[in-house]
Picture 1 (cartoon, rainbow, N blue to C red):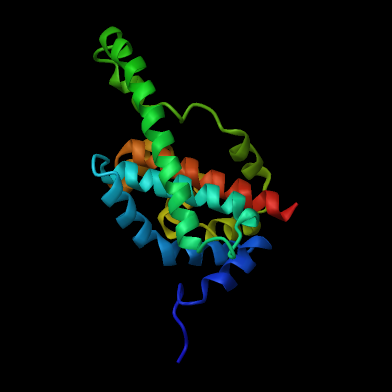
Picture 2: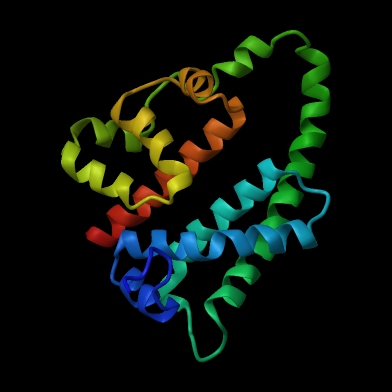
Length: 198
């Protein structure tokens, strides 16, 4: 009987991820994302699903970048990943608290200027997007295929189709902040995969 995606032993997927196999990391995502969300919902009860997804994304991004430092003799991958997620959650909460304290005064000064905020992130191409314009489309498509499922469609829409954040938000029916977060994470994953190819 053939195994379905995500059913391969974690140690094999880790070995493949260490040598830069993006699909192996996608399988690690598929295998562990459910339990990681459950862990975060149980330990960070005051966070909503937006923040849970954001922390999961950041945690997997960090794990992807640090995969060579994972030592299976010291802990299981799931335990290592939960530790990364716990620290990431604390960092996120701390950063959010600082940001909220800064925004209180900004909100008072700029009431009614939400239209400006809606376009943040669309004005200029990032360095990655400038590279993407010159990147071999087939190679970029390969990087996008290596992304966790959560980011694939959004990455195609932004990096291949050139849609603006607001257009993506309207087409997919998701919040603008969610679009920004997922695109940012997708770019970080792609940058990590590109670095491994160098």
